[in-house]
Image 1: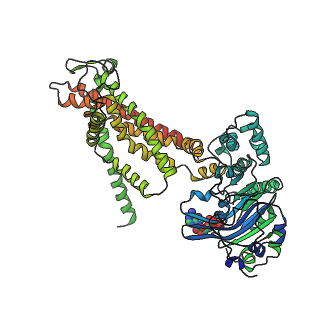
Image 2: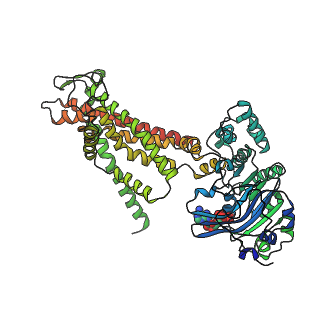
Image 3: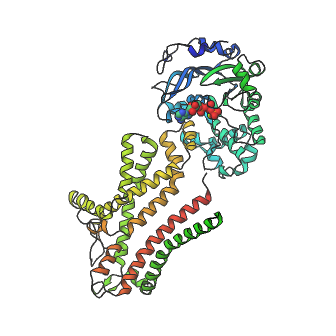
Length: 292
Length: 281
Ligand SMILES: Nc1ncnc2c1ncn2[C@@H]1O[C@H](COP(=O)(O)OP(=O)(O)OP(=O)(O)O)[C@@H](O)[C@H]1O
Ligand SMILES: [Mg+2]
């Protein structure tokens, strides 16, 4: 396995190889070199294409090309500092909040470009959900937490809101525990329940892709098991991109796994293949705990 | 020296230092209460001064101070919160914002008499408000601004960044995020800071001296362009300008003023404790 993806010199301008509407980029050379063909056969919801990102002058992501298959759970693994959070936060452009961030390349959500000056970032974010490492319910009632994204869209019809709350809490496996205390503060829930509430909140607006950045790392094993079960049950209905440090977790919940190292996507394929038979030495070393 | 002795000496010194802080407060309070409490009654609080202010009540001064501080806070609170939100949520780190921040910090250190002169020049003369309640309120408002802005920025800052991120990630605009998530959670801090700033200016004499305060008025103010009496200035004149002033009256006035300030500080503390108990996050 050579590292052609590192020296690949495809022309990348700011908001680079995007623009031409209607014209689908052919699957790139780099994607083929590190991505298992089985991934490429899937219908992608999100396409990350030749994406670079700089924090000031230090480059954190190098030419990442990665299609995220529809209706599947894709895990993103790699040693600390390799750029997993940076990549996942680039998908919904949360990195825009950080001063001095520059990027090149593009991503597409169901064909719509994400990185273009003309893009309405707010509309774009409405089509995604995100769950963070530390559970962060708003200091409001459980009910209001779930329907936050509907409220900001001005939705006030009681029956719509009620339905959403019930549907999302059920999807998030929290309905039975929370249905009698919807008006209580979300902060009175346990850590694990709070994280499931955050997932319910993230799926309230039916996101096309659900981004999760180490959603279980602050939870105890039992709460983790519950959240993992939940993620597993979301597949099919939702497309999930999940960052995790936990190899077993990646193996348990994901259909596909991508291994990142020093800002680059090194290997990407079906979870089984990657775990049983990694094609790169780095991947194997990382997964067997020899570094990282 | 063995560490235990050293520790004992250090603790003793710290304890004595703390006592030294408390002593003057207690002492001042004791003197004022002892000398002034006797005169405090309903009549004193609700009637006009009589007999060249050597008798009667101090109602116009109390009312004047209440009008001045509430008018001032009505001006300074919106401006201060807007400025704090802009500086904290929108402006980012630019040379200009750094200069503004520095200016605000320095503004807090400007002597109050300078604010008074500034108010005289800008509001009374240049804007031709005359010596009036509106000019006094504006001057006090400017004095409150640095405290309100600083406290509000601290309150905004203490709202976890993750709340903003999750709100934005759900498709809220920046303004929706501020209105729905950031401001409600910063509100206790903003209120506390505001009340403290009001308490601070309520007792100031210098800023109202040239802009609004009247030596004596036979009637209550009828519009915002009238002058008014005010407690700190009233206290200043009755204790320095009027011969044969009954001691009790002076101390009674001081007691009323100090009580107003204390009540406001107490309110600020209660708000803070209440919201800390509720532990927002
Ligand atoms: N706000 C920032 N400003 C500057 N550099 C940053 C910033 N955030 C991250 N970085 C750098 O970018 C690189 C990637 O960081 P990132 O947080 O994406 O790693 P990660 O893979 O999520 O790590 P972890 O597993 O520890 O969460 C790191 O070298 C980090 O130091
Ligand atoms: Mg991370």
